[in-house]
Amino acid sequence: MGAHHSVGPVGFSFGLAQAVKDPPPAAFAIAEDIISPFTLCSNVSSTEKEKNTPTYTFPAPQPKLEYQWREMEWTEEQKVSLMKTISSYRPSCHEGTQARVLLLGPVGSGKSSFISSVQSVFNGRVTNRAMVGTSSTSFTKKLQSFNIHGQKGEDPTGLVLCDIVGLGGGEMTGLTLHDVLSVIKGHAPEGQKFSPDQPVGCETVGYVKKPGLKDKIHCVAFVVDASKIRTYPKGLGTTFRLLRKHISDLDIHQVALLTQIDLICPETAKDVTQVYKSRIIQDMMNKAGDLLGMSTSYVVPVKNYSSELDLNVNNDVLLLRAVDHILQYADLYFQDNAPQHTGPKIDLGV
Image (cartoon, rainbow, N blue to C red; front, side, top):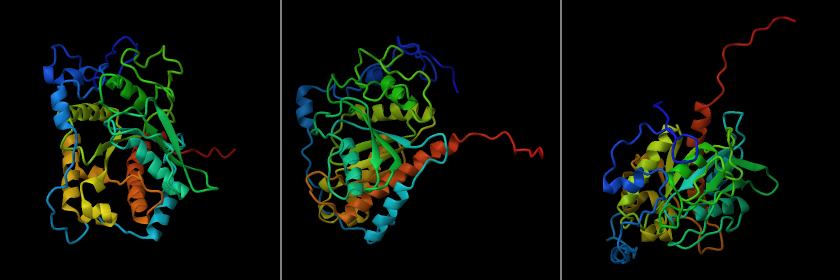
């Protein structure tokens, strides 16, 4: 690991590889300032904002792929099997009782909707557990952790989904790189509201000075809206890559959720089992990977419940596969951080 440098006025370090000696180029000024909020639209004029407002139109129809390019089984039995796998999951390392996953993405990307949708599958009916805002404003204003509960009568699963204010959306967003890293390292208390004027630090009420494994984030899931990828501000890719660099330095695995797939593909909107036969969605998953700077193998598509009142077994399977995908990478953290035994126990015969 490189030398650690303290950041800002808060008195603890965040593992920056080196201090920036020369002023960064203008295009990177926001991204490289660890205590500046991720105001992704701050350099875009009001005229450009109107021009960039997503008014998604379906691309020209493309012939479907003959076979699913990812193997999927769309049955009630598969749904039950996935629910059982997720419900029974416990981290490999005994120190942590649950895997904490942080959802990160632009305002309106569907983070809160994903949490509610996953819980809906286990509840057996559509419910909005995490409060959901509009596409232009972030309803989530603070750090909130949601224990995903199993079916009635079952213990909570080994999964906790953590919601946080969305990136961008104006200068009052208040989310900085410093605060994101504070959450991931386990310093930020539950319910913490974020403001660039008050970075998380020793003076923060409830600040966790020496976070244990149960306080930290064990996997980060980036959330992007398929219908907005073409219209996201240019600076978003830079922000994502900066985040990924610092998160990777902490040895945290990352995945991505591509939401709103029904808005870009009419066939999938009618029948979600067509998702992996759709060239449009395959192309958009590749674009999401490019935006985030990660391989498409880390990206999974999901269709959150929004206007529906009833569950759909195929949609449930797609959501549960996404959760299973997340848990696989979260569990790698526990495997990598398992207690090291110095050697075999010796029987002294007493």
